[in-house]
Image 1 (cartoon, each protein chain N blue to C red):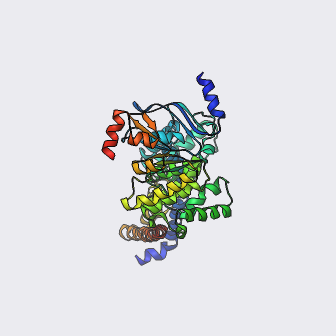
Image 2: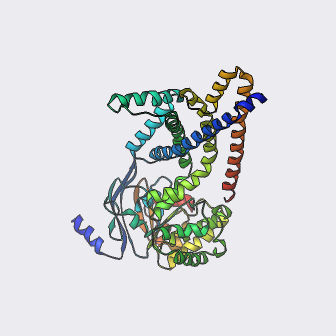
Image 3: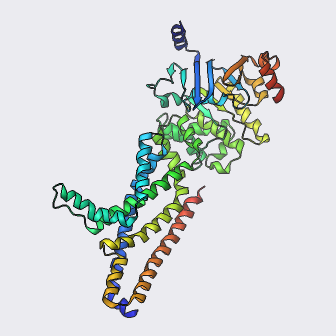
Length: 255
Length: 222
């Protein structure tokens, strides 16, 4: 029965991410207890929850920066929890944006953006440069292609990081608290880029504390606590009319 | 002092050349050894970690002079004992092996520490783009680690140069060994050792100034 359901999900090509009974332990600590989650193509899912609830760990399991302890994760029909899956190939299709940007500090913005596409032969050097220029225009940083990361502000770094991920032409984008390390006046410029991406139909999973972004952009909001999904629904339902006491309690603190 | 320089000047400079030759050879081999064992200690493979740690602990736990005796006298004796009666190591070979092993252990630690000083997020960002571990190491982590490693490598370079003097005990005619010969012939310790001390000092100070210059150049592009 479970197997049949699983196969159905595999053949359903609008399902981009399919997670079943995911568990993750760090030593004796259970961080994710039993997570099941589906994300369809073009959907924007926002994960909310207090720190330590497992949202970032869940996100990092999706591209296997953390290996799952048990359970299954299917991305675009590829079982990433299966040892025989070529994880690097799957990752080419999943962009990730980190809280601390993680730009390659020894490389210019242009080199940051062309390193992976050229090395993985996704594009020729010329093509990769062209794509990079277009993407930099899109995030409003076309004049920064020869700058080093240390010469950019936090908001600029994060926009470059988004552009770098997009340079691989991924189907899915993961955002791990992309605005948490930014000065308040720079949050808006990064969220604006993300909104545009959502409008263009990118499949996105976003861990954030920006409730406003969730309300405006998310198709679905998931509230996590203690390694479980407590409640999920449309932004309307979950943010304005939460049912679970723990969700109500959390929202009363952050709103 | 002048008479010593007149009589033994050529000999002293030849000896200095041999000192530099041994230092250079040892550093090249030590870099390779350090890379191998240093990288073994960086990953999370337990077997590699064990081998890397074992090498570093074993070599650092033995004084260089004992290591030199072991390789110069002990190893050939052992190999001759199992039937290869013509096996020999000359003083340059044995000395270079001992110094490379010794310097390699310290180099492994410098390389490990340098790589670990690079933020974990750099590797994660590379992996998230689909780049394999080795590629991320080579193109992203190591180039950034090298910058932090340069001062320690310079320091190790100087230590290795000075450590060649220990290898005078196995008869390699480097500077210190030649110094002993000159003193044995002339009984003029004060002048001889003063000259030799100055020769080491000039080379080392020059090298460290040059290295500082390189360090500044490398850091300029940040």
